[in-house]
Length: 74
Ligand SMILES: [Zn+2]
View 1 (tube, rainbow, N blue to C red):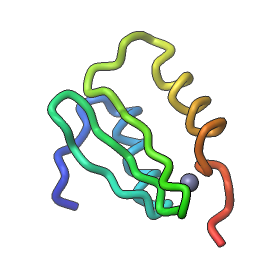
View 2 (cartoon, rainbow, N blue to C red):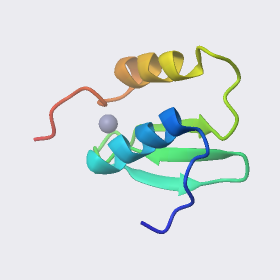
View 3 (cartoon, protein in one colour):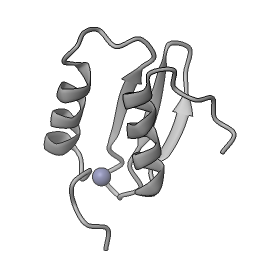
């Protein structure tokens, strides 16, 4: 994969998981964007610098609520 690695280990794991699910990962200036492969075109921003210790938990929560992160691919 040619994208630059996320410097936060836990968030790099999220990006890897996204890629494993078929999501596209792009790098912006201060964030990554992950793009869901589904027709509804879900996307989420992953900050390069997490805003706090709950960032990861909140991100996973939002992914589960707003996207098909937890859904099986058909
Ligand atoms: Zn989706």
